[in-house]
Length: 189
Image (cartoon, rainbow, N blue to C red; front, side):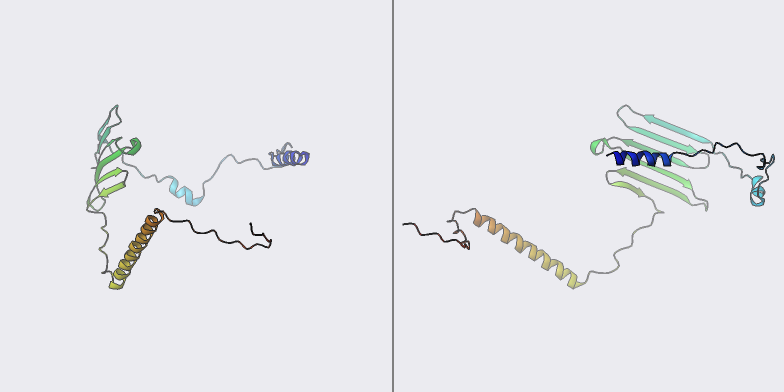
């Protein structure tokens, strides 16, 4: 136990920060009073992009005491966002529904409607990709194998059910198995 405590104390002493308490010698180089940016950075330093501030035209937020809410936002650059929600999901989870729209840089109007509930986020939009149809019919041998497996499962279930039924009826118990023994037991008279 003493060895463990001693090793922990030694580890803490080694891990403690080490400070150099020696005064700097006057030979050390003094910091420069001016600083020059590297060439690559100095060429970018004066060119700041001007960011346009987009005014918010409408920002309506309604919070009800029972947990329901609605949010409507519209900006001057054409972004429109609307969302509402209520705690109607399992265990009081909030179910949300909403939509947003904006104009893409190429001029396309992007509109998306969504529902977010216990089934996850479910967006709907003409611009979202649609999954392709199944590329081919299922071959007949696969369908035959599925039918065969279904028949096997039904037969197995029927066999198990008949076993349960027969075990519920009364019958004489089977004789106990004879154990091999190295000791002799005399017959009783």
